[in-house]
Image (cartoon, rainbow, N blue to C red; front, side):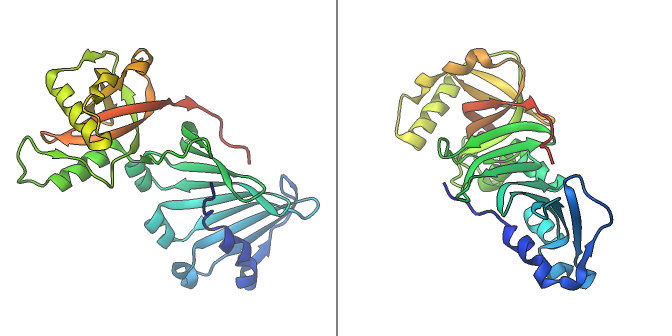
Length: 279
């Protein structure tokens, strides 16, 4: 699966665009070579994609790494505060993007690392919350399109769709927010589904797959916690015994019913601690 690697072009061309801003730092870096620093003049920052860039070379003058601090306009627009590109000779092999606290509040993650093969195709994406890995996708084995959002953010967005004048029995399903990933913490106690839960699951089955017996995949529910709020998650039968009060990234279909958010879970990734990527 080919994907666009953003910002790579501009950081490679920056030296030629602003030669008067280039400065070679004193001493030898950890790779055994020189370090070149490029700074954009304050009057030009708003029209550029980055405000500062540092290039690291090895002892054979090969580019090893580029660290780019993004401009205020890019930080505001995309939430990216820093991008780090790693090279093997002339080819980029991995890049990392770090995101602002404002971005993390809505999307749950604050760092992404993508690995690239010799054909410039991204083969793996890893999402982080600080140094914790919260999800991994390997391409092309996994092409599922579940977007990261904070669960409270999803609840607010669906409530906006519902509006203040809607009745208590109104159901909201959004095409924009139909397949979601969020960080949550499981409660310890699984409960049997109630009659209205089964009715809701049957409705979702008809909506997403024209399957009136979709409830055959579910028999339990559990509360999940996001910040100071809790929600009901319908648990698929195969992973009932894996719900152990741990923190996870869940994949789910969100639905707003009776002005409350319900979660139809279809899988989860158990978060584990990991050391920072080597630089």
